[in-house]
Length: 282
Image (cartoon, rainbow, N blue to C red; front, side, top):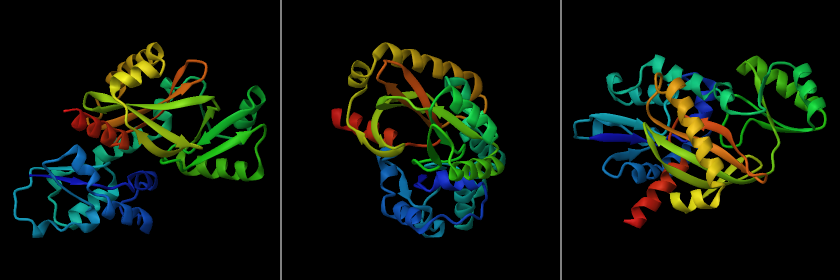
């Protein structure tokens, strides 16, 4: 039997990096309320939140454990609830995922983006270009973003220095005229596209659209070229270290260009939306 654990607090846990981090109550309640999301991806598995689970009450042979995303917190909680450690990633594998998730990892795929380590570096970029987004290297769901216009405020400077001290750097990304958000979804191999909407960098919802329609609608040539470049990079830099679910978020811009926004080394809502589309088309 396969056990699938829904832990949407994963990004927060990964950012903290500690097994004893306590997620916010709202994240835990979301995990407990919507654990059935995992059943869309794994319909034949037992799907639950780690906070609702006690292995001892189940009378079955457990062969595999899957999580929305692997981090030290969810591993600790599963072991505490009776799951054998040999069914879970090693500490070294979890640390590899955390390092891959650091936004600096994907800078080779992000034209015009920079790893900034000082106020002076950011101010130099502002002299070249007026509008930037500063991103904390470990963050998700729209958290850890600051929009900079023309000059750094005192709050911007303090945030930058604190983030550099805690997370090694800040990623500076040029503001672009984004007209659509598309993702490439993988689980060891390419599984499909997803189309989603954001607001001020915060995920809002996925839009039901088939792969063919996405490719036709959103800059087919640029999309395919970006996909090829991403896959070449993944093959060289990720496959030797990690095999599992990941989603590559892309920005389709008004000028026809397509840019890599980030890579999430976990399951994504785009995968859920894609699976629902495939099921409904059968």
